[in-house]
Length: 208
Image (cartoon, rainbow, N blue to C red; front, side):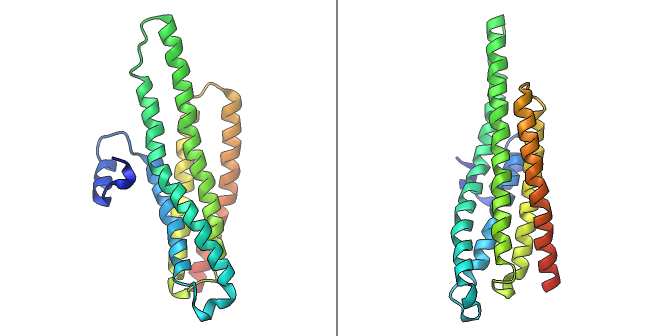
């Protein structure tokens, strides 16, 4: 059964168990999905209301973009655990001969790269999601303004959590060019996403 098909309490129980996955990567993707999902909810509570008619185009943009991003981040919950399982599977490979050891090392490097790319993509999706949340500030139902603040907090947590998962996998990768590339890209996302999340949160805080 996919993680996304589990009941919430069953998922939390599994997350809290001694099973190594799901872990922080899947939890980060879930936080991101909840964050951008909240922005879609706020837009849904705004669309069609005369009071916000002048912002209807923006509201529709939020509905469209947030819907797609929610789906992608939800899918990342399972993708992250699948990537971790790929790394774990390498440990079961034989290592009795030099050829087997070489094949095992090659498979591990490939698996670690995949386990890096999934949370990195989560970071990208979270940054896109924060930009969508920002669209709604001051242009959506004020009765749900606090939900946009919560959205920003969830997405900030998600992008930072995903970054930790990028880093822990990069630590085992021997390809220096790959490591340098994703360290640089990840830091660039953080440099944009974290101030944006704080800006959204502080704007909402001032409005309440």
